[in-house]
Image 1 (cartoon, helix red, strand yellow):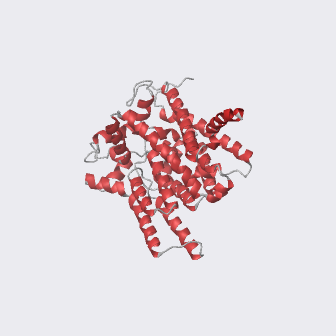
Image 2 (image 1 turned 90 degrees about the vertical axis):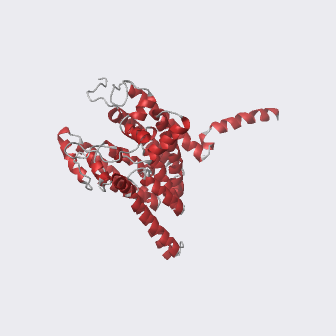
Image 3 (image 1 turned 45 degrees about the vertical axis):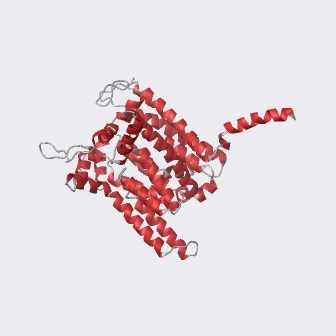
Length: 415
């Protein structure tokens, strides 16, 4: 009897250390923390080869490198000094690159963290992003768990597998840098979860916030339309109830999503007195100096002689289309599938091909669920497939940091 009593604490301790006994949020955060530690190590390794540049000194430590490089410095300028009163132009009258290209919610939140904690930007902003991304992973898990019942019934581990794939995505390192991806992913997942749960008031609030975070609120209207269509169809066949008030609410929510997509351009125009301020600012960042839908893809063949675009763009298009049209994608809930498809088409139309496009794909997390669920019912097969995809993505993540985050125009990577 005494031996049994002595063994009980040991058994309890072993159970606490067994991840299978943890609650869903514990497993989710554990996957997230491990992935961020991996990425932090890669950041520090590659930073050892960074030369002095306009953003950081040579061989910067972790926080300056992830808090000040590239767009991070633009967000810092906004957080500390706000936006210019007018759109800056050069001697010929051409609009120059300026802060109006960057949305306000993230720098406002980061400034709030700076005020409360008295931390400098290059520490406060990355910590904020890391915390927001942790919340985003929890919401991603719930969206898959509640929004894809058929897929989860087929594989109960799908929500956690989706979280793992999102954390391992090649451009996922930006989730811990002074960029808006963490906040945008949190809001996208939050909007989808609110719609799935039919909390339309909360969905409206989140969509408006999304419109102040990134130019990605517009495709959320497609999700609302699909959600409304499914509810109407189910109501016609006696599987649901849809009152006139609900139909009006969903119509207004779709209109709000469209309006949120134009909210920041409207604010830019009102503040500067130039209705085209946002579009002209966007043009200043484009290789073709145009924001016409899909026109950026005409720029791609200029890379033909480098041998890069057909080897990258064509397989990327084929893989993305295959994931969207795969049976595993159709097993997802209608809202998740609608977001994945609408968002990919949207960014293909409005984003110029380049490194940013791969970064923007991070928000299409339902494609991660479709990829993870592409295997059959065999537990061994699922494990092997997931391990393969994770290792591939983590390798590409290392490559992304080395190729995209390291900024040495003259080159200094060891042979």
